[in-house]
Length: 170
Ligand code: NI
Image (cartoon, rainbow, N blue to C red; front, side):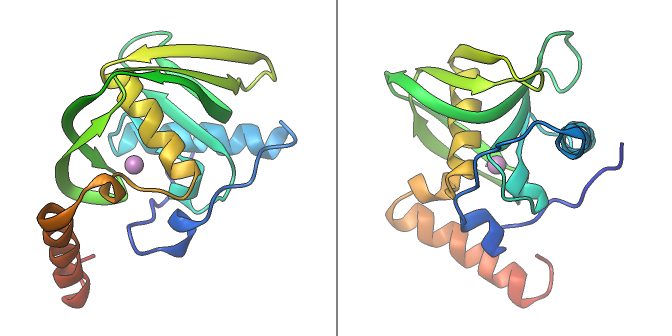
């Protein structure tokens, strides 16, 4: 299970809404395995397919980073069907390394998706789980957590990334 390169902010693939998965076949299973390996190696708690350059509506998520059996979720074509409340916490992203910013997200969400066996499923999450689900669905829609920032905070992070890019460190 090779670890795949993770694309960074600035790569246009992160801004394209991903294409729904229509076939759960062998290449998709391989992509899922590679994405899980890549997420654990990073390490991270979630990874969307477009973060490894594949514009498909697929994300993997494991808040325990592989430490808890049953912690891994493979989300094919996930859709948020319910969201309530609001909570503001720091959030980061493997495609925007070394930055964290406070982002307001729903406190609880319900997401419908298909698992890797083709079964339709539903997951309800609160707190960090709700945040991670929203973050990954954002990715699949071509959005990033920094899109939720406003004013000075947004300018500051974009300026810092711009400087890193200029000096070839991004
Ligand atoms: Ni991310």
